[in-house]
Image 1 (cartoon, rainbow, N blue to C red):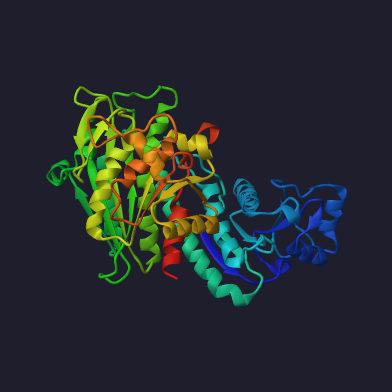
Image 2: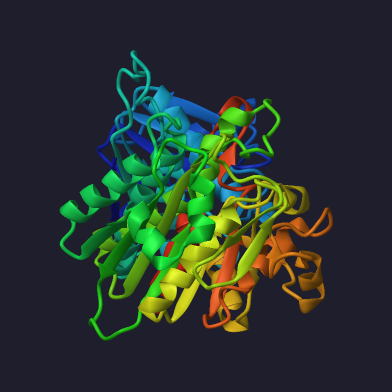
Length: 496
């Protein structure tokens, strides 16, 4: 998709389609009023007849509107103006994009930045328009013998802005949003691939290809023998039940001076999680291919940083393995020694994500990060607590917490802070090792983070539990690419 910004009157646009908003009940937006005036009340007459109410999600495509130079005009329902917010703006954009793509319109000029969203400026509206349009148009058909193709798909969106004075910053917003959207698509693609294709080795190969495409990237792959030498007993214990060898993928993006300490992102890369000996129920077990979505988001962020040439150093670490039942797999009651030297009693082999993450977090200390953030589909308890709307956030550093929360609010990819209190640490007590890998039924998301906190005492660290946000189930089953937008906004804010 091609995106650009321009300033100009809607009735004077020579294009396949002009998109304008209609508020409920039957009220014209500013750009729609301009068209109405040029067309001698053509739109007002339609509204009086009740052809469109302006309800959120409605659309109406018009042809050959008098007084205009475009082929078509798409009216999009925006709901009640005083109730507009970030989520409803995304619905408006998705409705327009879908109608254009399915209606055979290959080019359109969007006049939806004149919609007032409280506290948001034109660059934000431009950015959200692109991110939402790309999300709406995304299709995963790599594994289909026959592709779902539209005869005349939407290929070009021109975004109108109210004033030429905003042109420069809106062009920057286009550039950033396109890179973020590309990163989201990469994360979605990796997440949607089945486990028999997207193995730890496949992920490692994709990291090497990414480095070939960008001079600012350097990728190093640690094999199981390398991890054995480093003493990564926790990570390697998870891969014992699989025929696929584990990989520790290290991607270094260098966008700033070499002496500037990096931000380190650690993404859980379980390419399939059957639960090991503590095997999962068979219902929806296919969705456990999404257990590597934390790692996929790190790929997406690293790619977006390289595309934007963001002036910051970022290291992406993805510990990758499968978790399957086997005669050599972890057994409940086994004790393993992590890279840090701490011992872990494995009471549940399905709590394996924290085992691969803890060694990766210890490994990341060598980069002396300014901050470290891990991203993982870690606990079903997070879905119970927060559903599919917010990522769980726990951290040992309040300023980092606030940075991430604010970045999520900015780009509409939100998180919610949960407590990381010492009160919960005792739930991990073990009679036989330094700690157990689970903390009982209560506060599962928090005790999982407590476990990781024992490996991050030397770091300014945050943990994002994306179990509820990384993918959708049901009819719209598929990876979401979250939290690539949030993490990119966080990194962009650090460069400003």
